Image (tube, rainbow, N blue to C red):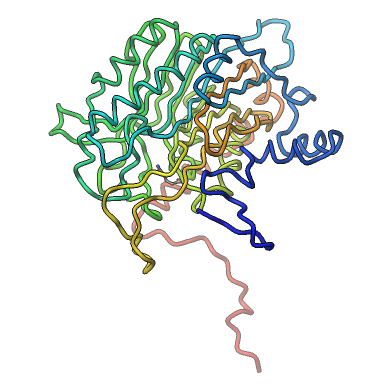
Length: 409
Ligand SMILES: NC(=O)NCCC(=O)O
């Protein structure tokens, strides 16, 4: 996506940078006077316990890996108020965003191997940084080829206990880390069916469970319904050694009731591994997850892949425009949102990255007590509304102004 500003200069460059900058945060911090930036940042990122988010002191080994392999590494800290009867419950959480490595024209085995090699480095960086829970991006083992509608990409699908899970189980054990692995799943016990699935690997390398994507997009070039159906796993929350977590996969973030259900089941952190492009969703990206974190009193970790993936054969978007071979730019910008409305700056718009955040999970209940959203919600009213709406004879509750239909004399 090459965009020109009113002076005819490139604003979004071919590499995915914005006027040469990594992110909105870096544009603002580089161009505003410090006291103005401080105020802008307060409005943009909010305050946590009345203060701007503090930086986490990152490990020297993690920093060395990021320097050597040129990926973005940032760390922040969400605090909670001190309580008398509960100890702080601080967990260190990581998000990884990455581009694919090899051209999509090369042998599938080589493409996959190269992604595994890259991921190993990023996961090592998380491990040596003491991350407790780590989430990877949607369909991380493959190019996001669903725009093509070609069935050969189904070859990337794997059973829940397949190669990618085994690869991550070893790293989970090594680093005592819970790892969330969103992949294209093949269910061999149910007729080789395909699903978009997140597998939860426990810190002992065990498989805790899986969640299948509930909402499948039919927008732009996101032709995912050609490959898999809506998930059948409900809204599970996984109780791990480090907290209660859930996964709302990509397009599910546009559905507030999907977020709500994970909250009702007790999630403290909900991950949103995604693959989305600038032209389609960038203005919505910083809003939806943050709103979900506020409305449901939990933390949200949002991840988007990076780069432009070019496919061998051209396809059309069904909009009368010329055929093309790519989706557009996946804009990265992974970030965390907290229940108090604060959020971290985003990772780079175009580089691989690891975002780390310490979060005191006590903040979830503190925000529930403060705002009382669970107590003021009207669940019976909504249940009745939804039950009625689901009936074939439902009629919208609209009360029209009688004068609207009165003929003027
Ligand atoms: N992967 C996926 O669900 N993408 C849909 C596009 C979006 O929701 O922004």
